Every structure is written in structure tokens, then in C-alpha cells.
Amino acid sequence: MTDPRLDLLLQDCPGLRLTTEPAELEHYGRDWTRRWTPAPLAIALPGNVDEVQAILRWASAQGVAVVPSGGRTGLSGGAVAANGELVLSLERMNKPLAFDAVDRTLTVQAGMALEAVHNAALEHGLIYPVDFAARGSCSIGGNIATNAGGIRVIRYGNTREWIAGLKVVTASGELLELNKGLIKNSSGYDFRQLLIASEGTLGVIVEATLKLTDPPPASNVMLLALPSFEVLMQVFAAFRERMQLQAFEFFTDRALEHVLAHGAQAPFAEVHPFYVVTEFAAGDEVQEAAAMAAFEACMEQGWVSDGVVSQSDAQAAQLWRLREGITEAVARYKPYKNDVSVRISAMPAFMARTQALIGQAYPHFDVVWFGHIGDGNLHINVLKPDATDDAQFLQQCEHVTKLLAQVLKDFDGSISAEHGIGLVKKGYLDSTRGEAEIALMQAVKRAFDPQGLLNPGKVFDL
Ligand code: 2HG
Ligand code: ZN
Image: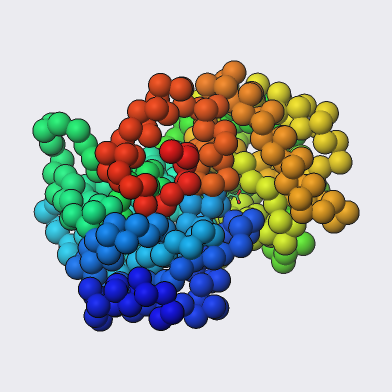
């Protein structure tokens, strides 16, 4: 190791896997945002909690900044290391640790992939219900650090609802055991909840005790074609009042075009401006009849122009691909991403205003709209036109986000619904959080991390 501080780290923690290979620095120094050039000091891949503690003790003694790192599938730059930080990857700490049938909890190491968590829960006949497209690559620790949402929030809530306990290593290397799996615990501040969505700025999550639940019955997936977005909420209400929805997702014709160009199969002979994917229990005559009744009621009103229901698991997966494949399908256009939320009741007015605003400011922009409409969460991806250079595009997109932030303020919405603030949205935090609130957030950060070494520059500057 050329940096003497790294030799000291290896002295403190002799078995630690540590690398400064250029390819590894590049790989671990970035996440799914591609805006920053990775430039970490080194990558540490601890194998256990003791090593994580030793790393953080060393970091605070040496004044080295640390970027906690999971699957790096984040879209807000929360796991970027571009300023000589040590990347602390939890990748090797990826095992289930304990299952308790009475508590219905699964305790896992933070580096476990979400999909592996799903599989481990299923081995016990239960589910961990938070789910989204990056399931194979993202880590549960990263999910917790961003309070990840996804496609089943409408039924099960965000990651926050499913965390019964956390083990966290603080900036000074202390190990905190937060909530210890308890259901009831009114003993003061709930640091477990504070750590959730803290984006690695308050501590390194090393273990989590997850709540599990019964698997739902097999499900049917229905794809609906809609004539306009003004009717979206009527369709949502028509379905929700008749049945328990497990998902209610939407995307536009532009989104579908990209997914089809990426190899998916067209669901309808005709093109429609808007689509909804919804999921509900199958093999249950009452639910199936309710779904048909909702569909027919919407058709009668002219709110829905066409529909298809999956007849097999393979067809259900095909229909889901139309929604879940969007991020991958547009990736080659280097999209600028917005992940915003408003109350569901405000969604149509918010969309109309936002659409008009972007259309007026940048009529040539290719904007792909999709998201978790049943949660009031929209993903607005602006695709880079080939003729525009990266810097100019970024400048224009920042302008769009500024306009969007103003609209969000008017609607009491959030600049980050589920992806986190990271580096990408920190300039807009004040559209969602008040001045006094941000000052308190900064005071909390200082209390946990007085030297400002944990994921510095993410969420806000100190
Ligand atoms: C999704 O809902 C993810 O598919 C990614 O949150 C959203 O790519 C995006 O903007
Ligand atoms: Zn999403």
C-alpha cells in the first residue's frame, strides 16, 4: 500500500481485505449514477463486525472519510466516492444469521442482496415483502439506508415498516444495538428509525432484524390501457374500493416504446397514452370477480380503453417486465432522474402542472414518466438528446429540477420519494424540509459524527 495510513489500517486489522487496484477503485467508487468520476483512497471489504469497528476507529483516528457501500444500485449518488474516501463495502457480509419462527423475524448481515433475503424468508414459508426491480443487485443494508420503497408499498409500506432491529457501527467505532427486535419499545428516541433513510451519514448498518409475514395467495397481473392521465385516479379508486391491491404502477407510451425497443413484447395491438399495471390475489373467486367488476366499471366510464389479465406466471412476468424494465431500457440515454412524491389526491393536478412546465421550458425534451402512482410517487426521467452535450444537458436538467422543486413546495411534496437525496438532490432539500428542520438534521449529524467523516457531502453540507 503506498498510503502510510493504509499500512496503519492493516496493522490495526491484520486480516482485512483491502484493495487499491485501479479497476476496483473505479468499480466500488461509483453507483448507478454515472455523473461523478470515482476516486476513492481504497476499498475495504470487511468480513465481520469487529473489522467494521476497527476500520471506523482507524478512520476517526486518521481523519479519513468513509463511504458505506452496498449494492451501489442507488440513483442519487449516495454511494459515490469521488474525493479520496475509503469505501467500506459490506459485500462480503452477506449471510442470513438467524430466523425466529415465534417472532417471525430474520436477522441478516447488511450486505445480503434483497433477492437472497426474499429467498431466505421463503425457505421458512414467509416473505419479506419489500420488492423492486434491482432486487438481484441491491443490498438490504442499502435498502435500509435509503428507506427503499418499490412496487408493493401500496400493500406493505416502505422498508421502514419492516425493520425490527439494527446493529450499527458509529463513526467512532462503537456498536449500537437498536430496538433488538422488540415490537413495543417506548423508551425514548428511536435511533433505529433515525438510521433508516440516513444514507450512511450517521452510522454503518452491519446487521438487520427483519419482520416477515405470510405470503399472499398467488397473484394475477392486470395491464390496463388508459386514454389520459386525468382518469388515473378514478381508475385507482375504482380498483382500490373493490379489492386489496398489491401494486398499482403506471407508465406512459414513451416508457413502453423504450421497453419494447429493448426486447419486450407489445401488450396491445394499438398504442395508448397511459398504462397501469396492477396486481391482486388470484385463484380467489371473490377477488377475481371484483377485479372484473372494477375493469368493467372503468370501461363503461371510458376511463380504460383496453386490458389484459395474466393467465400464467410467465405472462405475469412479461407484463411486469413492461414496468420493471423501464430503468434498464432508458439507461443508454443517460437519463436525468427525478423521484418525487405528493399526496395521491394531488397527483393529477401535480402532473398537469409539471408536464406543462417542462413542456414550456424544454419542448424538445424526451421525458419518460412512470412510477408508483398508488403511493403518489412519480419517476420523471429526462433523456439526453444526442445533439446536446453532457454539461449543457445537466445544466438544463438542473433548471427543470429547480422548477419542479418550486411546484413540489406548492404541493407539499417531496424531492425524493424513495431514492434518497445523496449528492444528486442535496441542492433541493429545502424544497421538502424547512430551514429549522434542516438545521436540526445537521445538529443530529454532528452528534453522531462530530468529525463529519461518514459519507460526507451526502444529503447536505455541514
Ligand atoms: C423504479 O421504480 C425505480 O423502477 C427506478 O425506482 C426509477 O429509474 C428510475 O427512475
Ligand atoms: Zn421506484
